Amino acid sequence: MGKCIFITGTGTDIGKTYVTGLIVKKLRDNCRNAGYYKAALSGAEEGEHGELLPGDALYVNKIANINEKTENLVSYIYKEAVSPHLAAKINQLPIDFNKIETDFTRAKTKYDFLTMEGSGGIISPLRWDETQHVILDDLVKKLKLHVLVIADAGLGTINTAVLTIEHLRARKIPIQGIILNHFHPGDLMEEDNRKMIEEITGIKVVATVKKGDTELAMDADSLAALYA
Ligand SMILES: Nc1ncnc2c1ncn2[C@@H]1O[C@H](COP(=O)(O)OP(=O)(O)OP(=O)(O)O)[C@@H](O)[C@H]1O
Ligand SMILES: [Mg+2]
Image (cartoon, rainbow, N blue to C red; front, side):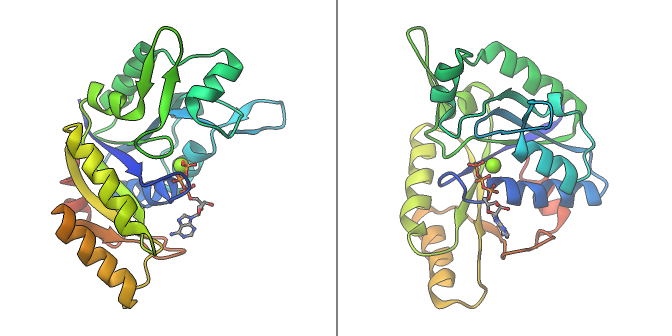
């Protein structure tokens, strides 16, 4: 059974997929058998034949040269660009967490280093109906995952990064580190953001990513060591 890391972010569109692409690429370029998995994706575009395309998964699959079959990358794909719990309600296709566990375990068995991307931020409802109330953090706990937090480098990030980490701590979810995206080295505020987030939370910023980066500025061994 391989090791795993769960990628969460301080919100949607923060760069989880972009950074995940760099992470998986770095591992694979350094001879690690690394894969990708996402439980639920909403806001999928339609392909030529009306099929739903899981953009995040297809992006990482391509950029990191995983060459995995689409159906093994994501368990639930919804068209509507809304939270998975609402997309599931609209489509009357609720998430079955046994299926997710099966798909996740299959991926974890196939790959030595599995990177699982979350939907939105850590408080993203996955299922909210008469029978079940499940939020993303519940799934992270159920699968016993350790997380890496992706945050923006700019204004407002101290608040969102610290709140995300405080919540993970309250739920007793292990945190492996933080990556700041859209970072400008030498920028007074962004360098201070990095320092303040580290000092307030006691969690290390393990890497920073600049706009358009094609390589993760971190050595593969240190990156692999974050997987649990
Ligand atoms: N460092 C970067 N350089 C260039 N483009 C970036 C960078 N980070 C993010 N982007 C772009 O910003 C957009 C949002 O990023 P991304 O899709 O990775 O966010 P996300 O957190 O995965 O969103 P979601 O919650 O929908 O999964 C994408 O178009 C992505 O290509
Ligand atoms: Mg994404």
